[in-house]
Length: 240
Image (cartoon, rainbow, N blue to C red; front, side, top):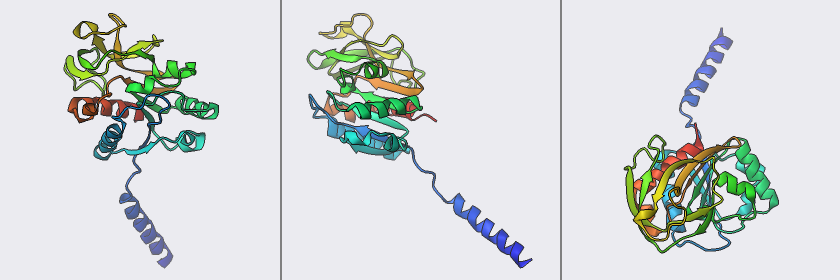
């Protein structure tokens, strides 16, 4: 009898303890390494993503260290974010780890110059959805929201007018699902014509990929609409 009571007490205490254990937060790995142009807005972008994490229940690990991109380390992250990365920043083993991560169902978010990265890696081009080609001077332009059902766009007006550095793209993956396009009639220097995507997503080889071309300026990371846009992309990449 005493033994049975003791067991019941132990089980009760264990259940109560488990009830007070906080579930672990999803983690994202925020990469900001550059091997080309360095965007002065990167520190502000890091702070903005970290703030979004604190307010929305995910942990942010910011790094410039390419060696963190290995199989064992990437397993702990629900998504990886490339914030204005530039140039060639990974070796072959690190590239293989990223491919395996995406193919295992991982999430990816690319922000602004993430498309100005890894030009000698065709898989990366298909995964992120396009490569940067050029840009005119910073100016105000009109963004046209094509899909308001996505987490990254449902809060946006149909026409979103703002100032940024507007990328022209090349090698655009025809399989991306376009969320926002750029109205080239609203500014000078556009080279993509009537089809000028500026934000998109797609399921790629088992992973969830989101990209947005906004975010060049420091002021971008003070804009509530842009921050909500970025948060929606991160939530999509993290998944359920």
